[in-house]
Image 1 (cartoon, rainbow, N blue to C red):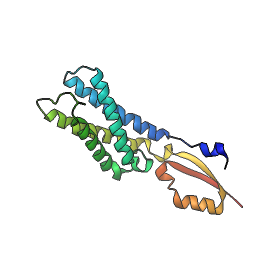
Image 2: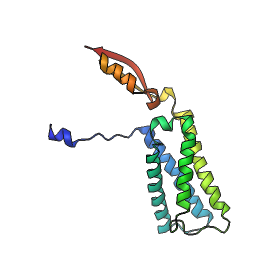
Image 3: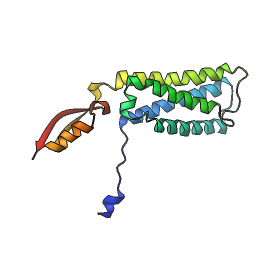
Image 4: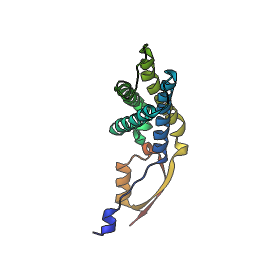
Length: 173
């Protein structure tokens, strides 16, 4: 086996996954900033430590539940999974001692944030499904290959759920 081929790997992130990842984190980190602002806490090292902890926790849970995979991210039926993941992430985040410096006297504020922030992310995901994940925005592809390979590809790959539209096929011998 060619050593260079053995050592190479394919690393690609689709624009849709990147968009989901960035906006999910922007909404969430904005919510953490709002929490610090409303409690009149300084935006110091504790804030940045909180943001890094949240980023890692959120990335872990979203990876485990595969909420950035296009079939999951583009499904109305999976919105409840996304809401569940963010409720868990924010609950763990706000209940971790040393990350959030002070729990307000009125604990209802934490409860609001634990519920409102996941709802905000879920609303963004709903808008993603309704606006961005539309057939007009799919990636157009052409398939070239032998009959068996093309049939196998159609059988084992759901193009529509992965945001691809097959424009044509060229079958070879």
